[in-house]
Image (cartoon, rainbow, N blue to C red):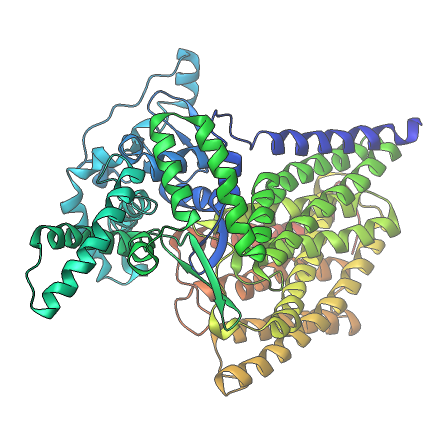
Length: 628
């Protein structure tokens, strides 16, 4: 029992944290916003629940998935979205636009930072960032200048824009996005949506009859036609400005057709009756504005049942995506990897087999959650796990953890668990920063719309990245642990060298196969096998560097120290092949230059060069005293 106590406590703590984090996601409101968050809509070319619309929209505008209102209270994204789409005037006073640029803030109303409750916390943490957040109404008076500056900045290539130009373009886009969001369910030009629809039902048939009279040259009621024209004008802009589609229609050629809320006018004109979905949404608008939570809760359940009965696949995927949002598998995995890191580190000074075992089985538990998160993404998007840079970072961490578990199971010394935790934390943090306010479950680009090649090429070449990083981080461990501790004895040094050699063989195979399969895919898509694209060159560099390491080992040119240093340099080659080539702004694989990302990448390269330099310090300066 004592041998498994640490393992049991560690896993129970991790599971308790997952449950606690999941349960906190449910909005605490009299309105059933949990069910509202499950309602499927179509936005950005894909089916998603309103919960994802809320989270992604708020993240783009404020950099967070929660909203802090002017009174200091924090609200879930779906709470903010409900107010934005059902009661826009109130939402327009919420400070949800984050503006860090001083020049941009200078043209907006001045805001002083709120004083912290504790003077000590104010001294330690500063004034905070409350004065960086503005509401739509605070921005509205300056929006014409913002729009003009954004239009001017749009004429400058994105990588050449200065800080102000980038900030003003982002703000203009976010303000327009917010405004359109408030006009997606109802245009808000009348206080009651239901009364408006009743009036339309009374006016439209009469207006149609008067139009027929006009066409026949008979006397007609111009007032009726004028009222009809007013509705047409309002609903035309209503349809143009709406951000997402709400109404599934019977499939055409096997594909469901979705329409916007503005279809209400067409329903009356075409069918003489309003659809249940239109009436349910209108009832939600009125009941929310009136504070009638009972009617709202009854109606939102009817709406969810109706939409999902018409498009069962959409309902299943929307429900799964909301579960994925609530679980936050990659966020909780970071917490789990931190636990593994602590367990592995403390197992060495205390020579604790119990902590070592706990680190391993906790890694297994975190790996399962990491895998579940990837499984959710595959189900939701219907494609292989890697479709963009964000998902590649998720997959690299997953692949490295898989290799680490195998190594740890073989040697049982805590090193595999430690490496898994370091790469897991690093890759998931990189993935988090790659979100950048975008929908990571984006619609697949047409040229990439091939599950076969996404599996054969992308997964294999990305697993090559993961395995090369894994060998590189073992090299880092050998160098730093050997320099600062006595952990690296001759036996352990020999073992780590054997692991690096084996992983490099493995990585060479995957990298080579991934590169060749990528060329075949390029030949099918672009009509040429090889075009010296930066991404293609980066893939070849990775293969060549792994081959160089293997030949250096086989030919006796490099022993353990040299192989470890070369493996660390492999991190530089891999990061360039994986990330660097995508930021050049050129080539078919380019995702655009990002100043901040390049600075982080350069910092990583410098850190790797410093670690390589440590490897060649005189042996007498090393605490482990291992000659290699």
